[in-house]
Picture 1 (cartoon, rainbow, N blue to C red):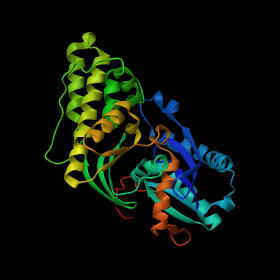
Picture 2: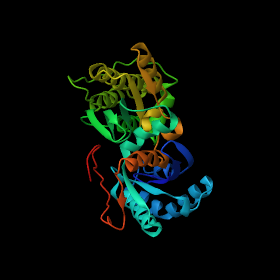
Picture 3: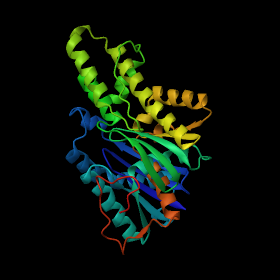
Picture 4: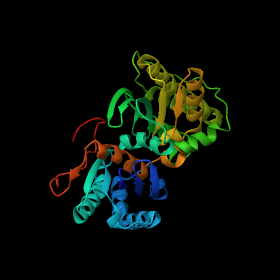
Length: 335
C-alpha cells in the first residue's frame, strides 16, 4: 500500500511516498528557513504563498524519486492540523484535488501523530504501547500511546513550548533564528555554571516561562559580563533535565517500559543522550527518530496515515468535500 503524504503545517513544503507505513520511497522537503530568517520567525502569509508556489513541484519530485506514477498511489495522507491555517489549507486543498481526480481515499492526519509515527520509520520493530515525549516549537507533551491511533496526553506545558523557549533565549542573546540549533551549538562550547530554576508540579506538566525569564534577567543584570556559552549550556541542561525527569516519572507511574522522542527538539543532542542514559538506568528502552525525521516532513505524515487508513479513519473525498484545516486540532480529538 503506497501513500502519498503531504505536510504544509508551517514553513516546510514536504511530500513523501511511504509503503505500508514504514518503508520510505521518497521524502522531499522544501525548506523556507532562509526566507523567514530575516524576520526572526515564520511569517504566516509568506509561508502560505511559498507553499502555493512549491507544492506541485515537490509532488512531482516525490513521485519521480519513488519511481511511481499517480496511478500507483493507493491513498493520500495530509496534515489537517494543528498549524498555520493558511499553510494547512494549501496542503489540504492540493490533497483533496488529487484525491478527487484520482478517485482515491484521503486520510487526515494530526501533526503530532505524525511526529510520533516518525519512530515507526526509524525503528521498524517499535509497537505500542509506549510513552512519547513530544517536543517542538509549538508543543511539549507527554503522551501515552495506547495503540497506533489511540493517544492520551498526560502532561503538557502550561505556557511556552520548549522549542519556543529555545527561540526566545536565542533572541535574547542575539544568536539568530532558528534558535534551538544555535543555542545548542553555543552550549556545546560551555559549562552549566549558571543556576536556573526548574519548575515542578505534582503532575507531569511543564513550565518554561520561569527559566526563560531567568535567562533574560541574567542577561540584563550582567550585560557584557555574561558568558553566552555557559548560559546556553545551563539553559539547555536544565530544560532537558525537566523533560526527562517528568517523562521517566510518568513511565514509572504508568508501568510502561518503552519511551520515544518526537518533534523538532528531539534532534537535540543533549536531550537524546539524557533520555538514553536515564532509560538505561531505569531498565527502560528508548527509541528516537533519525535526525532527518525529527523536523517537519511528509514521511511521518504518510506513516501515521497508514495506521489511520487500516483502522478505517479515511474518507472518500467525493463524499467528504468539507474536509478542512483545524489550526487548534487537539491530539486524539475527532474531526
